Amino acid sequence: MYRSVSLKFASGEELQQFLELLPKYVDVEYYAVTRGTNVYIQLSGPPDEVKRAVASIKTAAGLVRAGLKPIKSYPLEAVFREADVASPVPPDVLVEYLAVKGFKARLRGPELQTDASMEEVKRAASQLSAVYKSLEGVPVSPHAKRVAAVYIAAVRSRPEEALERLAAAGILNRGSVFSLALDLQTARRRVRALIGKS
Image (tube, rainbow, N blue to C red; front, side, top):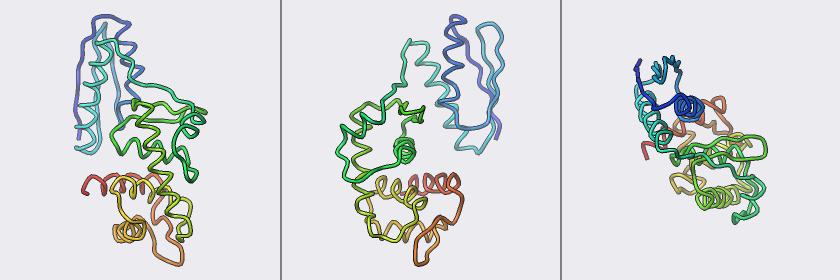
């Protein structure tokens, strides 16, 4: 699906701030053309993702126009130190879980950049840590655990049930050890879709 969006800003500085925010808010293919203080954005991708991207673009434009800086940086060391962590959680799993919960999140060196509050980040880290603890002793490969942990935390399911559902959905392979049936990025996309249906 293709969709065009055009926006006008009050100044070139506002436009520049918006263009810097754009990659953080848009997950589909796009290109942007500027003329003066106007920007024209062409989006392409699956219809649902394009609709979400259009809404995200409008949100980003509103934040820039209001002068808000929505993305905050938190040192990962501080996040895990302050959260109630029972078992270690890979930082990329925390980023994925925050994204599933509707937040923008990414890793930048030793820092987590997100629009979630520190309390929300600590809560997410604690939930994932509890899930990782519950998966100790369960025969799951490390990559499959990355995907399963996000699913289990999001739908609040027992590990065994969640692993069976993920296997039934073709995301995991059953065997002596549960392993990924797909590459990690595709598996993460399929898990997001599965969580959306729950």
